[in-house]
Image (cartoon, rainbow, N blue to C red):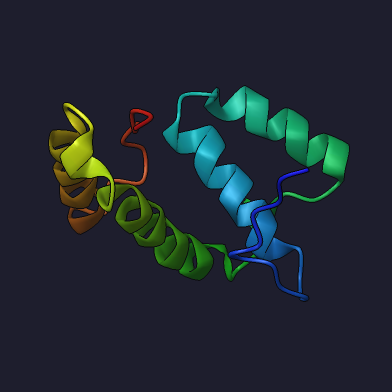
Length: 99
């Protein structure tokens, strides 16, 4: 069994739900996929007033996590730079390529 415990925490589910929303939106799963998840979970984190704050914390963290391995992956530096430019421009709809 393999378990990644880097971000294990006890707390409100919005933290985890924000990560799922980001992945659906950024990695091309589309709004329908996220809506289906939110309906099944019976909670849409994007309706919560704190969502923009968690989103704005989580997205740069997602970029920096991947930036560490960018030098070893062809094309990754350009993708990281593109994501950073999108964050700087507050482009919440820019799709991200998997690194």
